[in-house]
Image (cartoon, helix red, strand yellow):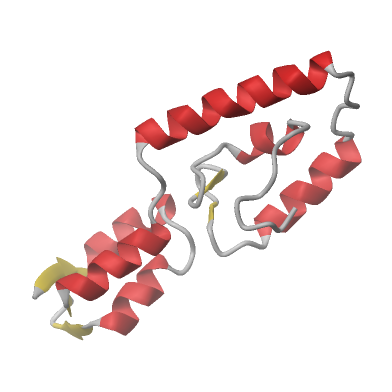
Length: 127
């Protein structure tokens, strides 16, 4: 059994998607301000709510830059301000948004940058 002070869960909450604390609390039991949770359940929650590794994020960024450069070379029209705003509106409602960092927990990307790139898309297919 893993024990985590509930105050610690709330302290890390700004760096996690909105449902992280609720998922942890629902998967375990709280006694005297301490969450008791099965390691398997905790690992499943972390897998859903954690960002990719820094290496995976760096690889993704490299690919994004390459695709953007190819799009520019192919004269693909830039993303309009309206299209970027529409993309960001979808992200603002997503359960995987890390709002304190304006990042997606699924891909780890900065959403302002990603939404402006021509060849980029939501890892969940939302845009």
